[in-house]
Length: 344
Image 1 (cartoon, one colour):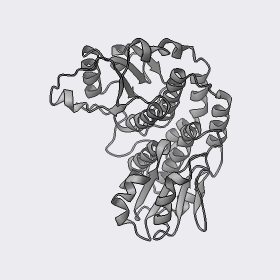
Image 2 (cartoon, rainbow, N blue to C red; image 1 turned 180 degrees about the vertical axis):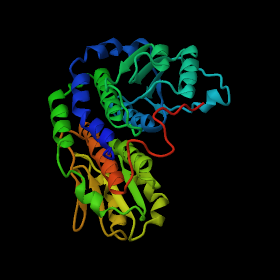
Image 3 (cartoon, rainbow, N blue to C red; image 1 turned 90 degrees about the horizontal axis):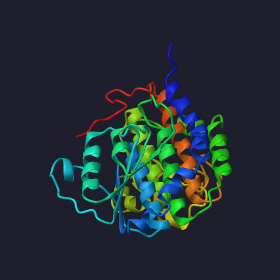
Image 4 (cartoon, helix red, strand yellow; image 1 turned 120 degrees about the horizontal axis):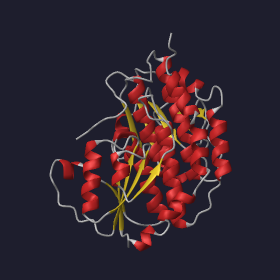
């Protein structure tokens, strides 16, 4: 009899090996080291869907904070539905996709390149349409990913995004620490057990994050929805205070993504208001401020918030997978989903 979640579990566990593959040779990044200057880049647009769109938010925040260029997220339907005439001179378009096959992404990328954009693709298939269209392609080196819910490919997207920006800023990469912490977190038994036991499917679940943690909050919400057949919100703590918090009750299960070195003041207002109503907070990562009955899903101890964030993606994936199995679902093949979604 097939063990529920066996494939998803094994693919999450492959993350340290994927990181090792990527970090073993950084010479490929030298080919785009000076692209911002040579192409006179004035703005950046990121093209993605689904899980890759959450990685896009991480890359967006990286570029905005580390380089200062304006970054936007594309609207593929502007081309595929409304036939917009793009004017993309001095624009860098970065396409992120596990498969590199979705027709709307390929259509938009083609139009962007014809509109004089410089196109970089990040996919798990060097022969995919997106990879072939791009001026430069970065392979995720994740190997075949069979579980419908993307895990190791998302983690690879975060790492490639980080390395790309490090190349542009001249930042030194602590490869050994990233691999070491990913290995430790991925192999920790009982990493999410307390949270799985204390989370109820019939009570509202909210995932919150701020800054670099926000993409992981979105991704955690998506993974739980994909694998556990429940509706989950994934929001910025700031956005949560601008309305959604009004739905907070004593039974709401609030998860806050808090990587090591997260600035405490960035979420202080949100946690203060949440604690007035909710009995406990679930923390994903080591940067939170747990008290009382709070439950901590311990994360990485990297030297900075950015690398802690990309390693902590493993924690949220472990939770989604184990919560699905505990709920009697097979996260490897969620009903109604397929591995490659071909949107038009």
